[in-house]
Amino acid sequence: MLKYTIYGFNQEKLLENDLKIIDAQLLRFFIDFKDSGAMATETFGDEVYYWVKYEKVIKELPILNLKKSDSVYRRFKKLAKCDILKHKTKRNATGTYSFFTVGPKYFELISNTPYNLKNGTDIIPGGYGYSSEGGTDIHPGGYGYLSVPKDSSTKDSFIKLNNNNSIFDHWNQKGIIKHKKLNQKMKNAISKILKDYTVEELKESIDHYAEMYHSDYKYCNYKWGLDTFINREEGCTKFMDDGDKWIRYCDWKKTPKTQPSDRKKVVTKFHNFEQRTDKYSADELDRMAKNLRKKKTKLKDN
Image (tube, rainbow, N blue to C red):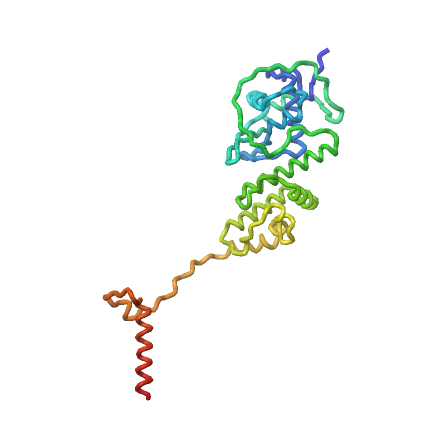
């Protein structure tokens, strides 16, 4: 008897799209991790896409027997070609990144197919061989994993790691102090601040600090590192939406800025004197003349 679903997806629809068991596994992990809220995201238009680091897929899912990042990339591209996922590429100074989100055909896979992740998954019945077309992306690293274990303590560790990486990357994009490595001081600082604030609130305060630092605002010319920015009493919380540093800066931005006018120069007869001298300036000649007049006045008085 044919089982209706595999990993919560309609088998008939999977076959219609020429998808294999390994594609269903990758899709399952992507959906589960996306819904955990721990993946790095990027907004394209009005849609949120999720960053996939292919090297980490290989590391975290050895059971799939995928040896190269290109192999993972091609399978995700296959899912995008079928409109089950949608794909966007972001390029910047640090590299090229692939982002995915669910496509219109994804909902056909889950239509009328109840699936309870807490009850576990189905048994993998088949092999893995699959040849597909596509190019490759370059991935210098930095965001996170694609799979989240069901164990809550392990899952928390994954979420913490992704938060650290996401905040570290966000900081390095701001052009203040670019750190080469996420060290333990930074991890401890991030962990501490996230007990009271969200990742988005911390990123927003980083944005505010960067804007103020790069502006003409004279009260924010201090150059901090990430851990200092978080740990200082006058640090990140003061740059949040309700922080006094940010509020004062916003007030300053609203104030009309006037360019200082040149002080009006006093023009004497020496400024109009056509004969030039390399020894004295017009101002110096004027002062000398005034001093001479004073001396003559004193002599007359005597």
